[in-house]
Length: 175
Image (cartoon, rainbow, N blue to C red):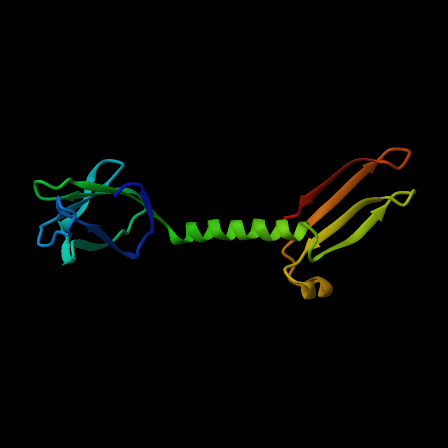
């Protein structure tokens, strides 16, 4: 009963504990109370008695309707140690946004590694070295062939010395 459990707001969650006696056998028939506290101010959010399922397993279900950090305190009978769990309640949208950002980063990184990209709107100096271009990356070869559904677009620029050797270059994502 240690560590932080991350759950999504407005979703029914089942919390279970397993109780054994001193000999290591599952212990049934106990009355186990729980209290849910808001970690910020220790205010009581909910409390009740857990249901004795079978074979030493006790459970209760709860839906958190606000985000934040919480603690669940399990009150066991004398002779058994009490327990606690830390809960972090998050918005589903925030979790999905994090996943979407990660997917976007990986997709763009894979695209920049060489798969499915196009370079266009190129500009060259008098010595035929590319000084400016636009780069688009695509999810598939077909999209790249047809210049459709690009994932991201970048502007590339380079500077050269009088011997036409590159001094600097940069590639920035366009908004």
